[in-house]
Length: 348
Image 1: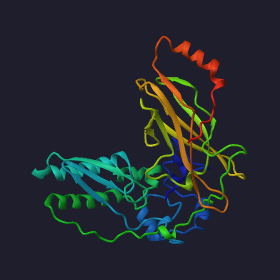
Image 2: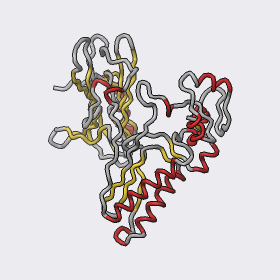
Image 3: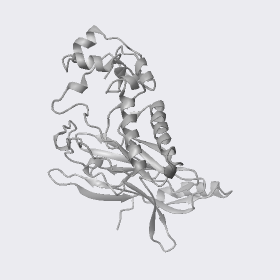
């Protein structure tokens, strides 16, 4: 990693005296970085003109800091060709990969109208990939290109070979698989010890409940007593659900945390007591179907010395109305009578 890596980017600058576009070393930082690993002459020559700040490519304790085996992949579905990129390609790098592959497919009559798309951060992560010209400038992306100035050329060469084999209908040898380091990885994140809620309350109980009525286009926000999401990541499930009441009285899920219109924000409120809250937001649409709705929060809480246990809570039932002339008078009526409605509706 070069000096400009530590400088960060325009939208996320780094600390200290690092600046982008640095092509020279600094005696102080060279002295500090050599305690991690002093780059070999071969490494220095390979990375030129990048001044090496962190010699991550030659550090192997407790395991390799940078991958030495990178998986690449081409997938074709009809005329669609998906290029799996194991890193962050700059805009120009991506264009050159796409243009090189498109040219190969166009030369073949069977896939002449192929559409090549790039799928970044696929299967592995090998930092940034800058063009040769970008590498000479040594801005953040170039300083984070870990295999030297010809990294992009190597990728284009390999992808081109795979594309040619695909056009010819020939199999591609799998090659050497990257090592599986899952069992060796270190984590410095403390485990969840326990979750708790204030006395007299329950997990999933609203702290700040929904209003009784919203108009189309309003933002619905409910804050719940919650627990650490790491207890269960709710894979193939959801931390939230926006439910609409059907004509027969049943509830139908219309949105989950997989929808763009919802947001789940978890916050640790008291570390020692293991208390936390979750803010669930739903941005209603300008043409949202009117009716009765509620917001559900689900998760797992961890009792002390026990395995995590599931919990579910719901907001009060509220109404989404259209932007009619009677809306203002309806709102006034609701606000006058809002203190008569229970703030928490436990599930039966």
